[in-house]
Every structure is written in C-alpha cells, then in structure tokens.
Image (cartoon, rainbow over all chains, first blue to last red; front, side, top):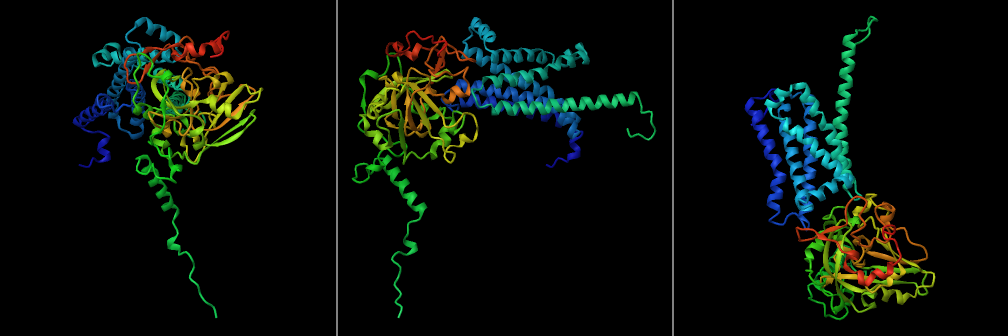
Length: 223
Length: 318
C-alpha cells in the first residue's frame, strides 16, 4: 500500500492512532532486548553495566526524539506529529525510571543513606538525579484532564523544563565516561541543533511580531 | 647461433604472497590444534597462534586460588576488555584485535642498564620457567576478575640486563601501529600507551611478565604477546603488547597520568579509601556476580606489598 506524501499532511484518525501504537511498540524493543538477552547471556560479561548503559542511552535518545517532534512537524508540515509527542516523552520517562531503578537496585542495593550520600558527593550522579526528578512533574502533568486543569499556559511553562533536563542528561553522560567522549558529544550536538532551531524560530517570530506591531515608515521597504 | 634456454623458474611456479601467507596461517592453525606441534624444525611456530596451549607451565603453589575465591571464565577475560588501541568499548578489542600480528615481535630493553638488549619474543618465552599464578584483577572502573595468568617475575628479566645504580624507574612502552590498531585514530590517549613502575615495585616477586592466561598464550585482546600484571594495582597499570622496556632515572609520565592527572596517579594502587575523582573505589563488581564486594586494600596483597609504601601519604600518591 503506497501512502501518498500529501495524505501525510492530514492523515486519518486511525492512521495517527496506529502510528502511536507503532511508536510504543518500537519503544519497547530496547527493553525486550534486555529482557530476552539477560537470561540468554547476550549482554556480555557485565550485564548490569550493559542494562545501566542501555536504559540511560535510551532515556537520552527518547528525550531527543521528543524534542525533534516540533521541528519535524514544522519542517515537514505534518501538524499531527504533535500527537506523538506525549507518547515519546512518556517512553523517555519510562527508560529514565528503569535506569534509576537499575542504579538503586544493582548499584546501591536500596541503601537509601548510601544513595543520598552518592547524590551529594558525585557530580555526575547529582545532575543525573536532578534530570530524573525534573522529569517527574512532566510525566505527572501529561494527562488531558490535568492539562485542562492547569491551563495551557502553565502547562507549557512546566514543560519548558525539558530543555534543562536535556542539558542535565548530556552533562550526566559526559561526566561519567572515562575518556572517550564521542557518544556524549553526539548527543550534545543533536540537542544543540534541536534547541538552536527553537531559538532561531523564536527570534524570527519576535522580529515578525515587532514588524507587524510597527509597520515600516519608509515607503517601498520590503517586509 | 643463439640457443634459447628455458628460464629456470616458471612464473607459475612462484608461490604468490597470498598463497605463502595462507600456508603460514594453515601451519599456525595446525600448531594450535596440536597436529604438528611435535614435528622438528617447526619450533618457530610454537606459541604463535591464538588459542595455542602453553607447554611446560608449572602452577606456582604460593599463588594458587585465593581462599574464598572462584576463577572467572576465560570467556569473561576474552570478551570484556579495556584495550583502547582497539577501541574504547569493552567489546571492541575482541572484535578488532584479531588481526594483531604477534610474530615477529621484539622487546627492546634499554636505558640505564649495563646489558641493553633487543629480545625476540620467543627468547622471552624461554628466559625463565613459566609459572601459572592466580591473581585478583581489579579495574579502576570498579569491576574485577580472578585470573590464572602465565608468565615469570619481571625480576628475572631485570637481573638479565643489569640495571645501573641510577635506574630508579622502569617504563613500559606498548605497540602503537596505526595499520593494526584502529583505536589509534581517535586521540583518546597520547599514543603510544606508556606505563611505569618504581624499581622496587618492578623487582617485587608479584610483578609478572605475562605471556599467557588460562593455559593458553595471551589472547590478542588481552595484550598479546606480552603484557604486565601487578595484582595490587589497578589493571591499567599493566601495559599490553609491550615493545620497549626502558630503565630511567625520573618517574615516567604515564599515558593515564597525562590524560587526567587529577584522576589517575603514577602509583594507582588498589585503595578502597581513596576514590577516583568521579566514582567510588570502596566496592567492586566481580564479573559473574550481581552483588558488589568491598574492595580490599592493595587488592588483598597488603602483606606482600604494603612495606613498599610505608611513610607515604597514599591520598597524595594515589
């Protein structure tokens, strides 16, 4: 079945719904790999480390995917993509929870005192933990009824936190690698582009608004 | 009259390079399977191939399995490696080190010694009786293994070259060959990778010139054909695929000290009370276990090595 490109501008309700389920399904693949790979020893000689790394990586990737939805929507002119954003964001949160649980369980063995000390003492844990904690209000306020209760403006303000979370997550990654910073640099660049696009668009729209508010006095100037 | 004589060798009779190499590979493989190990005239191929069993190795009873410990699996040693010359991921060296050529191989021993010498690797295999020693192996990244290494004490080699009085340190220089080591393209460390020991550490009976593990020649990804093992120090102190051993007067600047002087010290003794700048060294994960163990001072070798560091502030000389 060929999908005509123009039909992707305004697809049917069913199509959007199915795409959402497809995203959830794809989002479960990294977890499935861990769940199947663990008993089958696919995860190497240090499976706990593998799980910690994998869930961390997919959290950052999930945040990057979430943040790429708005730019993609504009660039492709596919307004409906916005309806996948919450799913992507919740998937990122899901992996953040797995990542934190792995740390809590297999690195600290639920020793709360120890965890608190670790969070205070180790800067990379501090920023990682901060990023995780800041994700919680975003996840909690993702239900339609809550969005309505909060009002779009306040909801939007809370959700601007995602930019800070993205930065903290990359710092967390950067500070934990021993020497080879290739991977964190890649994610930092992706976030730089995604945040940079927003800054550029914001600046442009402000300029347009200023122009609209005060139309040029001189005749014949281009606007 | 011109008499045409046929050329002595027909071009078709000349063994091509690839054929020649293929035969060498076949010989190596045959050696490793023990098919032609006993044939005379082929001794040069002994201990060449990956997976070849090392003959005549005696277990050193002093360094048997430490109490309460269990040997790790050979597979764990071979599949989980830090050898940045082949890539920074643990699984890069097993994938990329296959092509490492460990013959011909020489180790130049030079510097402040009376008898500098370039040793052929096969000469080193015969320099001293090969012994098997089971050591704990603790990585600075807070994971560990228990490994039966094969080798001989470095002191045997040191005695053979007779260091001068002003030789205070030993520096180990390892292979940095871009053609064989894809990781060198990344400027992660200042290549070649170098390491060093103080003279008394180098002479210490625990310090092992390592040529094998688990009964076989050292796997390429673990530093074939020759590496160092000092069980009371973090693993990175043991340089892999060594090509030069230099006796020097001043403390050498090692690769990891250059990379992060606040995170890696020259001594790098296993010390649960002195944390890495970014992570804790109090506990470690033994590969194969889910819990974490408390790390031991000097990795459990305090009785043997602590006297070398009396009076030293180990927080300062970490």
